[in-house]
Amino acid sequence: MQKLEEYVKMIKPEAAYFYERNGERSFFFALDLPSADMIPVVAEPLFQAFNARIEFHPAMTLDEVKKGVQKSM
Image (tube, rainbow, N blue to C red; front, top):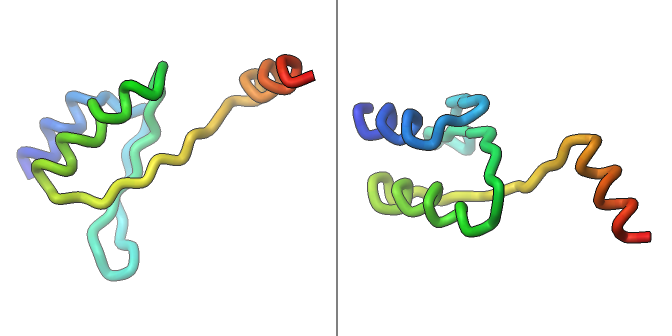
């Protein structure tokens, strides 16, 4: 538990949820990563401390979607 608490303090998520998924302990962190090079910073401690399986699901705000759509036209 201490490692998990230290990790959460380090990454400072906007939200953190803990739940069961397919019979395993799971958690979801909502993070604002300014660039893709932050992925190893977030992922490596979980691989090392918990041998975790990790998924990243990029998401955008409505303003970011509008900005991206304007750039694609």
